[in-house]
Image (cartoon, rainbow, N blue to C red; front, side):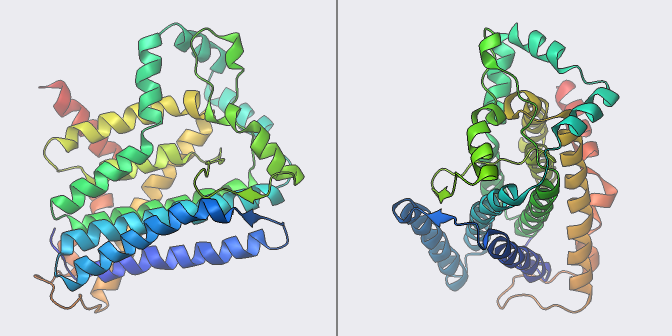
Length: 338
């Protein structure tokens, strides 16, 4: 898709969500005694300034691909910083842990994690593949933004970013009422298993809950959300966004699938975390395109200098016509036939 009238609509959704997150963060963090390490804040601030400058250069210079890509990076960087701080504040205010309930839900679904851990411990190659996939989520996002903006799919990029922010915001809010330490295991009991993120972050999460962890290092913000899993949400959205790009329509779903499968093991997530994360991705990919179509149909005008104008029908109900699971399945079948 080229630039069109839906661009300001999708962007307003993303910026509105970011503003809402800032408000929620300020309310949640009030009175908790959090402090930002000023020395560690310089690098993120500099990065945000560079991205803002790139947006301005793209806009003033009539370079829509640069503007779209830089805007996406700026929005996702702000979302990440604000979102992690919000999750910290909610964790600090959270009530009783939900681990027993989440573990019970997993058993009801048939997940046998001790057996999974034992099996995974016997396959070093699979562990490396899964570990690299799980820890590459940021790389997946960067690649998707670059690919989408470079190929001129600016409208779809903006929709994907809005869906990512919406689902991420909802994830963080849900985590505030369903706090959990995670599906942790002691790596010392195994020969090859890597320590999961949940295992590594146990002390920090306990410190947030009891009030001993209150210094924010903006260069080392860690995701602490267990339920739902954003590592299951974002890959689905990125796969949807790249569904018809030559090469990436095959690579993206495979990469996403490996990430999702590896999430319980390397993230310390319960199975229900992953199921809920996928459901949130589908929800966001239903809601955001609908809001964009409605906003476009209501007469929202495009930016000055847009090369083409789009009607509401021009973007089609993408999430309804081809749900994320369908894209991933189709791409997998295509890959298997080659």
